[in-house]
Image (cartoon, rainbow, N blue to C red):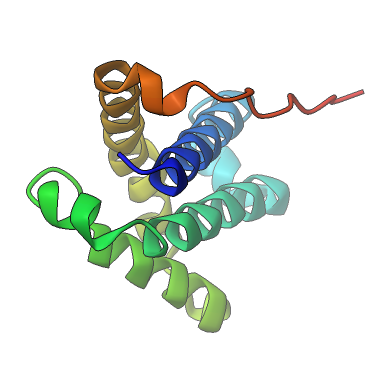
Amino acid sequence: MTYNDAQRISHIKQHCLEVQETLEDCGFSYERYLLRGTFRRSISLSIIQIGEHAGKLSEELKHATPERIPWHEIRGMRNWLVHDYLKANLETIWDTATVQIPALLAFCDEIIEANPEAFDFPALPEEDDE
């Protein structure tokens, strides 16, 4: 695994964790998600960031894992959210956050566990919520 791929996988994992944190904050409630713009925007921005990093992964990594992770669709969702956000389907975003993101997080964890030497770099800084 290349250093750049390892960095991107690390960032993708971090954004997946941010989606999960937002879901926890809204109590995993679709109704609360719909009512609070901050929840919707937080999840959407993390999905956009995931798509940005996914689009920059090496072709070698993407071609080695297409049956597990739909890289093209991840990038497509990023483009859809960035270029047509006002028409975004909130149910699709919710499904992505609650079904697809946990699967992507599990994939990232597996990649990191299988290639520990590739991920031997300083951890991403923790955000201070205070």
